[in-house]
Length: 382
Image: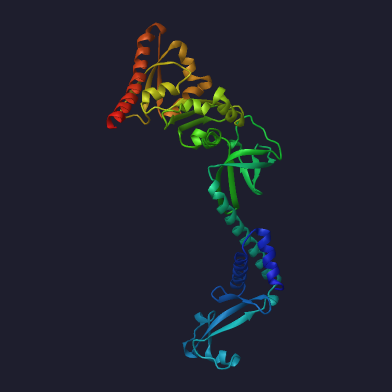
């Protein structure tokens, strides 16, 4: 192997790897080939010859007494009489090194070394890329569209690394052009038997969460907290938020003046409609807000033990039922996802609604009372 340093530097540069990793890959491939071609049990090592600027493949053999030798030791041991015929002043226990001449190997064996080196370097390169990507998992990345398949899967590049966005991870109705930069969530990155597999998505709720962090300073700074997000990508989403700072209106901060913040996010998500809901730790209040724009009359939590999922019985006026359900059931589905409750809608006549409205208002008063009591205890404590 001539000019081994030049070969190592070229391979290291081409694959973006440290020289020591390339050298170890070359050594490992040479040993692997020797074991395959000569003897699996033999002790092969690769030595660096600084004088000849080369690697030497050698087989190490331990010298043993002739009487102790048996056939099972032939790959790793040589008898003292055999060793003495080759080397002067040799003793039992010494180690002899027999150089393997690569040029004497058949062409397939030598080609196998280069193929294995290539595969090892590829795996090393994939591990280096994976290490760099791991910090960005579940974060927004900028990807460049490089190919769109007939079935709608999108191939993208993230810093010259290929990733895929399956059709299921695309927002319904959006289209891309080759060379277009797009924002997406780095959903997963792993090494499989087929190589490095990277998947990105624009449909995960994390996409909306990360966009909110980018667009709303109060969320990024932790003054406004995202409680939960539910999405039907490309159609509608509900985001429940609350404020750590009593001086901040969580809905107003998230939506922005004249809706500028939430509209910017909606535009990024191909026009997805985004409802902002103020979270409450009182389930009845939270459910009422989650079902907006419908006006809920009352909410009763079903505390039956045999339910797989919590259930809320919601009284609603006849004219409000369609709003609660939403087009194709989208509003009630999102409200259920964001609250964790299944809903039973009990429709009542409008003339019966005044008493129910008073019940709903008493729930809101309960929440306000809790807030006032907390403030009073704070001042008393001072």
